[in-house]
Length: 177
Image 1 (cartoon, rainbow, N blue to C red):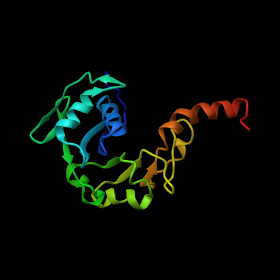
Image 2 (cartoon, rainbow, N blue to C red):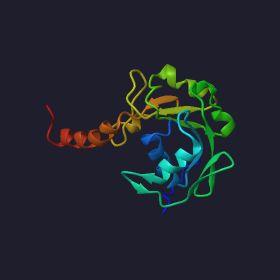
Image 3 (tube, helix red, strand yellow):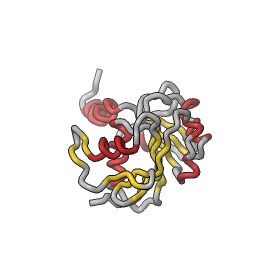
């Protein structure tokens, strides 16, 4: 069952196909409003991308199809362009059609470093880790403060995303000292 939204289609890219990048790709594959168009990982072969995406030790075997074909990662019949660049400014996100990039390497976590993806043609960058200087948004906590003029943002950490919504409710109801 794909989740459907009335929003326009978002063309998406992922930098770093480790645990977080693969989970973002799995989540995107379940939505009709997100089109994963490109993945960059200079440290992983295409065949290994297929294997790791297909067999996740925590989330189990991918229920759809995934294969390597003609130099692309093909998820549920949809070809995804693969890049192997170490420098984000060299990734041709624009050529691949990626408007938004998930920066999930854990390396490019400042606004200045993450902006290199914009040099490659992306319009926005979401950092999947805490950032020293990018604005941070957590769903259920402060996501409504996001505005379209923000081009590089952090989605905080996985711990924050798990804990913050619960802590917000507890704080509002009982107070946290």
